Amino acid sequence: MDAQLIQRVQATKDHKAFEQLVQLYQSPVRQFLRKLLKHNDAVADELAQETFLKAFLNMGQYQHQGKFLSWLFSIAYRQFANEYRKKGELISLDETKEQALSSSPQEVQWHSEMTVKALMNYLHTEERASLSLHFTFGMTHQEIAVVMDMPLGTVKSLIRRSKLKLKLLLEQQNKELVNE
Amino acid sequence: MNKPDLDDNWLAEQLAEPSIEDDGFTNRVMSHISQPAAREFKWFVPLCFVLSFACFVVFVFLLAGVEHQAQSFAEFQRQELLAMFSVLATILLIWLSEHIEVFN
Image (cartoon, rainbow over the protein chains, first blue to last red):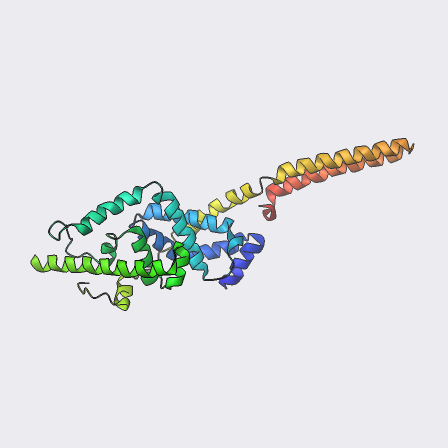
């Protein structure tokens, strides 16, 4: 069904077909961007809108190789990177989190019931993106490499490193909770 | 939640997200769709004008040929009508580009 809708948009810029595609894929695209933007929902939804507009204009470039969702994610990730990384806004946020991570457990203000999702915010953007794509959206390492425009080996080590960081954060938090 | 073991299945369970309701998102996207599409066809109206002018020039040359061959006045009028027809056809195309979805 998706393939037919995509072909209709590619052939005639069919608005009705594209509307159905947006309805089908809005949820994962918005979830992904919300995760990247640390649940700043309004900004994430704005970027998601731009992602779909860009997808509509560049539909001809989609070659039906790989999942359509992966293609949408790669547009969303590029949009996010262009809008925010260049401005350095997220880098400064990441630095703040990095400081928290490197601080001693006593210096980190843990909330008593921080979920794994909340701890994800203490990871770098790329680490958060790779873990979300793999564990939330079930993408393979190869698919993530395409979305994030990275070599496969880099993606594998990125996921390994991110998992380790998350594990350290969980251990730190557990120690804190035991000491309380 | 306090389980520090990062087993892949456990992590996937922890990071699972509920589906986000549309809440007008699709409508907001679709309301913007026609604008960039129209921008894509920005060249269409100027092209129509250029084509119209080109047709007009071609017919004027034809008319000149007709004059040299001393055609009748009725023939002259017929050619003039053809020139006018090309202009009208162009105006019709421009109107269609504004109103018919296939151009947008």
